Length: 411
Image 1: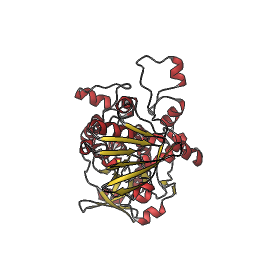
Image 2: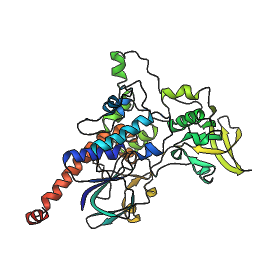
Image 3: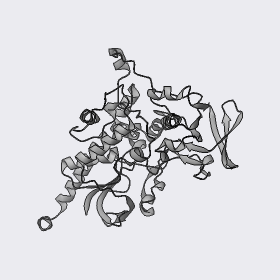
């Protein structure tokens, strides 16, 4: 039986695996490396996170994004130079090759309880037994489409998660619904790809991060608005650097903070790609949609109460991701029924362990327990260290409990 199985090979899974490997803890990691970034983000996109906050974490910081860019001759700065999607994806794949050559590019298709551990079924037909399982599935499975649009067939409605190549929509009429980073970024790259795109957002104005001035910040600015992995400001600094303290806040306070912090906004570098170029429908709430004469009619309620109809060929719901453990269908119903949940998300211990002993969650699924930083790659460093500490102790207890005669026989 394996000691540990990691499901997912994005920044969180790779970071944890690198920490376990450094400690000599036996594990296996399954998943397509950087799958969400490589196959479900639009080409041409750039990350909102600064360069220093876009690392995958090995315990010695031997292979940061800065190291990777230096090796490849790619322009890099801790702040001020946006990180291209293609750069971050290539970095993740290089991290895998250098740090985790044993990664198995296999998909976990089932997870069931068995004795004192779990059985993982793989898409190859194999089965693997493990005492503990860490779920680092990221945004996979959690794409959110509003109910009033969800009835449309896929020919007329897709989620932004499905759009890797904007070129496929060249020359087509498209409405992107949403006002966050994914919606604004996607509208920008669709426009550049030659699509006739409109962006419909509930907010009366789009929000963008402040562009860097290029000037040194004063001591007062650095004190009042300290830099952090989530951007400048005292609140962002707390969420970035103190997820362990965040975990002990009252549940209601945690849920409100996650819901309200770092709301819909795009990087400063996207502003000029959208404003004055992409047709904007602001203060517009999507109420319903139906198919008429081979096209989709989207009905909007405007901020002043008026109604508006937009006829288009396709709607893209860039409406984010919503964690719901019931959507992890590869986990057996028996296990899912035993998870303690709040708003569909797992209730986690201070070590990221769920109410089902031996199953851990990291990444976006851990946000309600450890804060908004779990929605970003920057949170992978804390999660990897914390979970690795917990698993190291657990594995040590297991080995200590094995009788000497069995331990010798095993050798």
